[in-house]
Image (cartoon, rainbow, N blue to C red; front, side):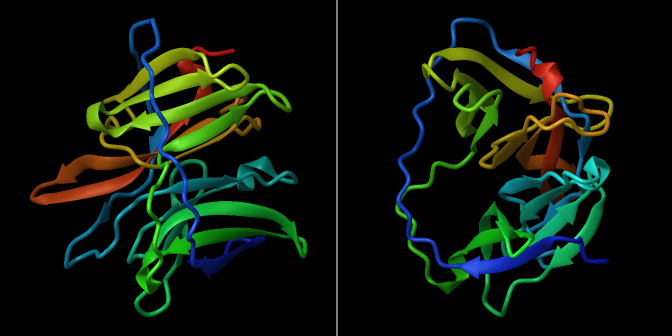
Length: 229
């Protein structure tokens, strides 16, 4: 795969303790939305040894069409996708490595760095707040999105007040199947080609399988479909 300009990978040992988010129940009914695209399935078996887990989004300010989605694949390392979900780069972990979570650090030496937690080297993470991301609409305003893995729903809270404003579920659609058992999410409010209000990228822990194989992947949701301002 060709390398993506401006992206480097760092393996780092994480010992940060994060408290799990508490998902309340918004008053309104759960909204059903569909994904605009999905990435290729990853298979955690003898033929694949890769398991999708946590996404991040790199917005290319000079050329929004070259923005990228970066996802961890555990023993499979890192995968980099374009906005249509096509894989453009694969980064293998070091021997014994297992990339679990990823985030971006911008502007270091003129580069954006993809920083990963590596559980293959003995990292102890006592509590993970997985499946949590922020969609900003201002310096302090916006929305907090939290995954409820048990029932495959997502809860949206007002970023200022923590008030629950919506719950939603990603269901089967014409471009991708739905999302189940998600524990990773990333959002951006940046205008992107085909997505003027940004995107939400979600881990799908139960991608519609090929015959006899259970797979995982990432779903790309147009933020507009959530019906939020």
